[in-house]
Image 1: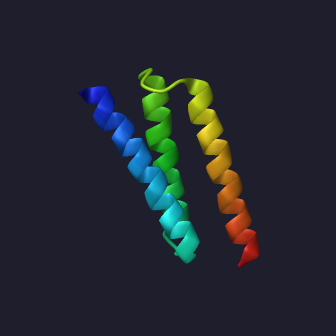
Image 2: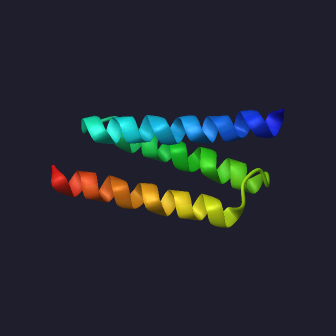
Image 3: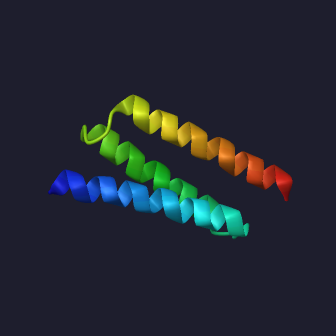
Length: 71
């Protein structure tokens, strides 16, 4: 059950980040940092693989940079 809640928290933080980024909300950077923290925690505990965490962080960072450049 613990793993399920941690995975759910990761997915929720990703959705939260994407919604902030699409709205061009100033809270986007804060949501990105929170998402990265949750991914690192889940990877450290072995809930998701380190490569999967790195891949998701990289994709979200690129998305953040693209939305920031488009402003």
